[in-house]
Image (cartoon, rainbow, N blue to C red; front, side, top):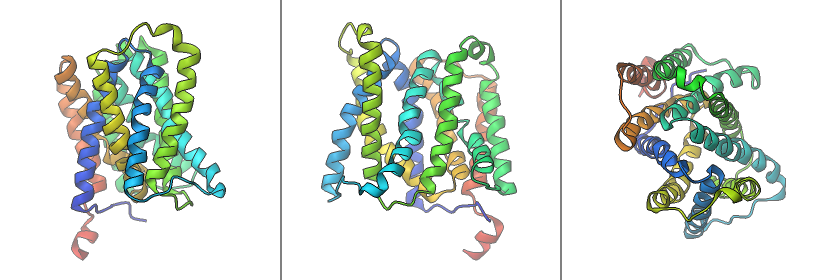
Length: 301
């Protein structure tokens, strides 16, 4: 089975937009959780994001009701694609630098290949394995100068790797879903469950850590997440995860950790090394294995 997917110009533009939003959001989240408790920050973002999604759904004439027979599957999709990712990734960002957290989180394509083989009996093509190897080389290069710092924060590292594995499984489930529920409705209810879980954690464990209202920079990070990440980027990702095989969709967004590293340089004053540029080349090669047509498909176009 061929895993080379030809995306149209519109989908390529949406992929570029998703890469930009999610990449920049890593240092943005770091700004948000430097002083605010992580689940409190995430809950405030979701409180802003839910009305945005509801208004978009209403403007498009979509009902938010989900038939009873589809709710169990929706629960699994919500937990594996958003809720558990939210929890583990936010603590990872709190404990690690934004660049390290992004790099570890986007080991997802590697875990997606493993999950596909062990859980779903998939056999990725040779071309996708080349892409996974190139992505792994890129991740290793990005982490080359970070091993000492990561070793000093094993809980943060474990949190991000756990988030990546769960996200990989969720991507497989999203592609294989049987319900016809619109992606916007899936996103709305996933975010609702995320708010319930993260809000509960914040109330139980973080209420004594909140001593002031967010400052201007933190409100900016909250607004960025509420309107751009939840109101737009999450919908773009679910669309991409639907039209691409799981490993391919993961490889297609591998520029996000690179964007996270480079935007961290711009926003947080982090320093670039030669490994960052070499990693960029590896990751571009990985993306090419997915987005460039095969010789056969190109000749038949």
